Amino acid sequence: MKPKKRIIALNIGLVALMIFSSVYLWIVGGRYTLHTRTFLGTDLLSESHVKISDESVLKFDRLYFDDEELVADFTAVGKGDATVNISYKIDDDEFHLTERKLSVNIFGTIIDHTEGNISFNGYEVVIYAIIALLAIMEIFMLWMFIDYWRKGDFSYPMVACGGLSIYFFILLAYIVYYIINNYMLSFSFFISLVTNAGIIMLMLLTPIMLLLSVLLAVSNVWLIRHEGFRPVNALGIVFAVLWAIGTVLTVGTNVLPIEWNISLYNKIILPLIYIIGYVECLFISTVVCSSLSVRYKPPYDRDYIIILGCSIRSDGSPTPLLKGRIDSAVEFEKKQYDKTGKHAIFVPSGGQGSDEVLSEGEAMEKYLLSVGIPANQIAREDKSLNTYQNMKLSKKVIDTHSGESDSKIAFATTNYHVFRGYILAKKLGFKAKGIAAKTKLYFFPNAFLREFIGLIVDQKLKHLIFILLTALFFVFLNTI
Image (cartoon, rainbow, N blue to C red; front, top):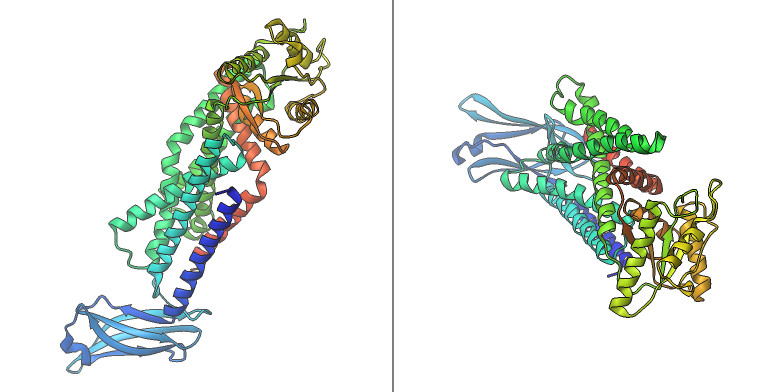
């Protein structure tokens, strides 16, 4: 099934689920079965009495025993609040059993919110509908992630699917585990469960994020020592500090909620917990997707191989970094020819910098010729000044050289740069597969972080919508 059809199917399933649960709640919500948790014996039923403070809101239907528990049924009459008192008499003495605060909302649903313990008829179905919704989202996101991986379609949508898959899996696993091992007495128990699930998610993610943050900070120190200080080379240190502050404000403060203003905690800390959890899942997914993109082996059917440029030496020869990219492209092309008998055209791509004696594309072409690649197997691009232009102008060279626009393309670059190549190719509207060249490990963590920042910026509207929905959800819970 194609991605668009999957999204349509997902939306249909989610809408159907919400309609079903809404209709079911509308049908049964106008009645309420009040369980008193009192076991008197059937001989005292005739002596039990029910009083309603406002009969324009509720109507009492009947009082009966169910498994020896005294139970009362009510029907909604109009919107408003009412207090229900149930008592019984022995001789001339009246004994109070229970007092409940019930309300009827604008949808005609009777809600029992005595001492904040929210309950209503059909709440179990609402809970199962929410669980089913999480399960559908988890299956869909995981399915999409695996499909992207198998096809070698490394992209921001793949990262989002992977991050949401982690996010929904943790929430779903905790909620299902709790429900299996505990009886849900009311909807309040479920609300409390959802609240705790966010804390559990952060606690589970904390060791992974701690490791990644340490690696980021250490690699940045290493990077600065070897490559010099630039703001971009310190991104990992900044991220590690921000993550530590966020963890203290969420997981750290959760152990002492009593010292906090509880309303402030519910309105600010809980939404922040879920938002940070969401961001952490996206970051972990970025690391996973970037790593998978390096390990992915393109099929041996490529028509063209773009070699992404970088700086050259003062004498015009390739630097070890650039030489690694060229060698990896040559090695792939030779394997392709050995396996399929098909040659690929090399597209060395890179313009001339102000401090370079010739263009990077020309330097790479000379190197290719020196290792035995014939001139008719090289289509040089020598105008680009950055990676984006490398991909864009190389695609124009390929289209002109081939006379068509659907050539099968690969691109060769340093391993930490492969995922960036996939992203740019997708932005420019063509498909390409990455060939990774090895380099020093300290480049990797910063590359992960840069792609993560790119994901946040590129998909900022979608992330903002998710964050706003999360905040509104907790405002709703706090209002209840």
